[in-house]
Amino acid sequence: MQVQPYLFFEGRCEEAVTFYRDALGAQVHALLRYSDAPQGGDAGCPGGTPPPADKVMHASLQIGQTLVMASDGFAAGHPEFKGISLSLAADDDAQARKMFDALAAGGQVQQPLGPSFFASSFGMLTDRFGVSWMVVAGAKG
Image (cartoon, rainbow, N blue to C red; front, side, top):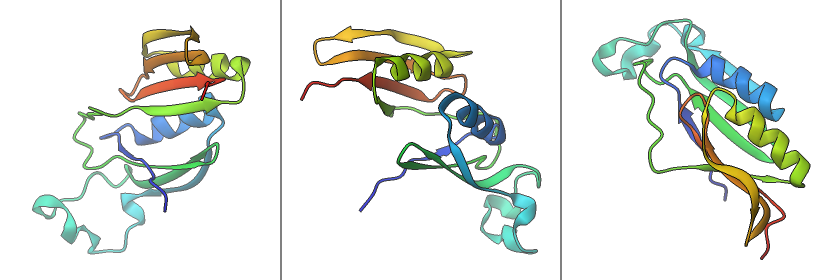
């Protein structure tokens, strides 16, 4: 069994997918727009009104060994990523620094990347889309 995160960017999904591809080397496996759905496929949308046709209905991207799925949801413009954080386990401190700096561009650092009692590198940030990340390398135990 696997747990796979599914993130709803409420209108900025394509921008986020491009950002994660560039920042983390994510491989995009799928990107389907609402316009790709069969005609009459809007019956499951609240009020029967689908989001704009050019918005992303479903995307899947591979970050390392993890499949992350994403969507524009209903493209309401107000994504909320509360109470969760995605954790990236880097191979070494240099990779941790590269990923941390890339994700922090345009975002907000909560804890600068540096050594801790439990890892050679650890830091926390919220990226430009509001997604919280923890980056760790050399975890002890």
